[in-house]
Image 1 (cartoon, rainbow, N blue to C red):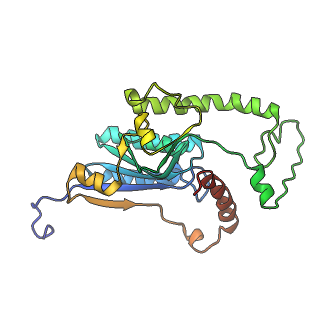
Image 2 (cartoon, rainbow, N blue to C red):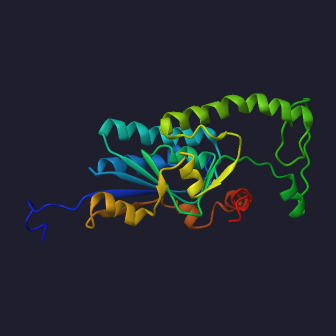
Image 3 (tube, rainbow, N blue to C red):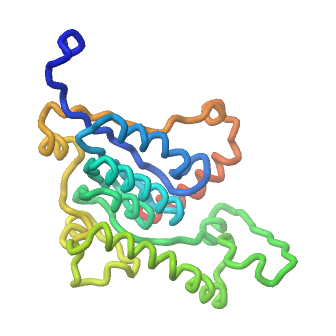
Length: 258
């Protein structure tokens, strides 16, 4: 009917960008290069808002920053609000992405905030031995397949400090005065559902569909946007990369019982 009578009012449109998985540069991972067309498409639809459906155990700080910056840049250029919805988990880079939203909504059981990992124990459980031959004293520095050394830990802390500070700055810019000063929010603790709301890390407990209907009306049109698998992935021609990526993904998700 609307096609036949073009002046009839159209329902408001909200594209829903699914950001599910680890964050990095692999073919399986969330990264700026792969997501750029989806994000650009969402903001070109003349929507009343853009929604982010986030379910990520984290990953690359750089890719998290690039993706979040792209979302914020377009939101501000086009004056379009962004609503982030956390599903199972938004940890480290996952929460970085959530902070690209003007507000963040969680499930009562959603896991929120920062964590890191290394996995020599995982390799041992899988019966895999890592052998490294190097020509320099620091060439195998902080190999994630090997147990940590005290000197490596000190060097890693020095390298991670500016990354951690960039994360803190991003969260503070996004959340502003909503953040509670009653707790140290950046010491790698994990908060669940309402706890994250009480600390100002998120804005409330709500699910995507009913929340968007309450904001934009029962007739709001939600348009899911997700990445398409490449031809090589569909044909199974990237088997090695897919297998190694699956091992790393499994290790990250397992930290949260998922």
